[in-house]
Picture 1 (cartoon, one colour):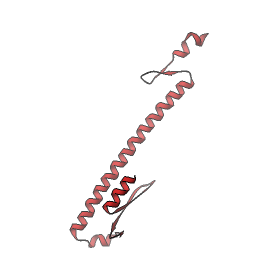
Picture 2 (picture 1 turned 60 degrees about the vertical axis):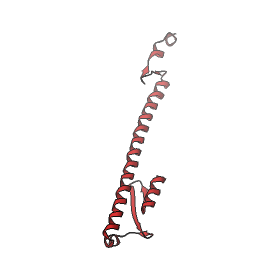
Picture 3 (picture 1 turned 45 degrees about the vertical axis):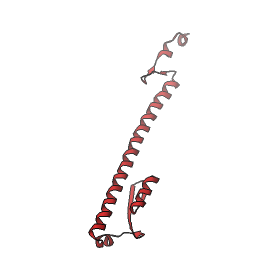
Picture 4 (picture 1 turned 120 degrees about the vertical axis):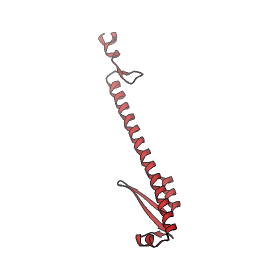
Length: 112
């Protein structure tokens, strides 16, 4: 996130993050850029701002995709850990393929 904020600042934007998403504010000459100022810019400056905003939007999307992938990976790891813990609490051993072995339940010691 820090890197993304620095990228935004270097491009002339302020990036804020909340639970609802990202908020991007364009700055021009050190002040927030309002719609009237943007409309009054010469076409080349306006095009530069639009390009910078597009690059920043792509960077934000890449971060969001990475966060989603990490979340999915975390959920898979938690599910696997839960299965392993349940297996261990019932005396089951996980096998190499991740399934539980019922061997301890049917061993001579279990019936002994």
